[in-house]
Length: 275
Image 1: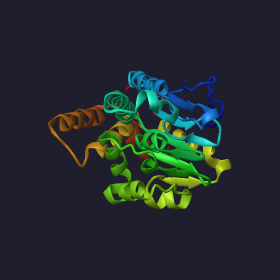
Image 2: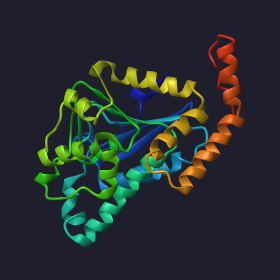
Image 3: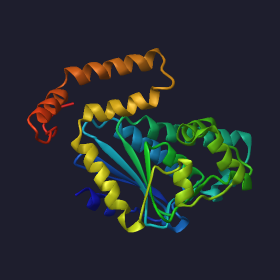
Image 4: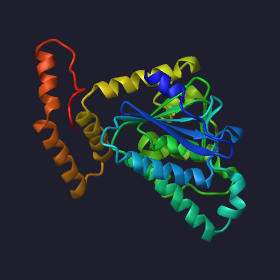
């Protein structure tokens, strides 16, 4: 079911767009600009922000898969052809960079698991948006990196923080200083990928992971995301959010069903639970 949803997601029209299909609690979001290896235009950055903000209002949502159209690229970065009009001086760059930051934050703030499914190139902004997701599952044919030294732009603070949480400070320095496009084994070792599978098996592997997430307690999955994201930097508001999730977990029906299923030696059924 989920593999069909992932494989058949719409790819949009020419000129670049963000497409989305939602079915049975799972959203498949497609970065669609195949003629330019799914490069992200400023319009697409805005669409992505608005879409993830909308998805955050869907109480039935359980997981999101973010992918590129086709199999040549996840996203080959920002659309550099727009830079002369959008990012060539401090004034225009400020607006562009703010949009990029808001988009990445919207992706990261979604309180359900997000999976970047990576075929081919994930470069620059493509690498950055994949690191706003919780997990990155890639094929054995990826090229991932941020070669901004060749452009003369700098990495913003939001992007840097999201990369550091996955690959660490020294890992990010290696990515930026080298300008290298890392292959699958190197990306896995560095932390740019969490798992590598053969290209022909990529959508099946992602679908299997989505199935596991959907079959699990929604409360537990949301809490797992929130607590791991805030564990290193807990402040009062974060602690209050965690406390609310703790109460919901231990007062909720999922825990009772999970314990009962374990004791009765059966699979838990969370499908009728209301969260």
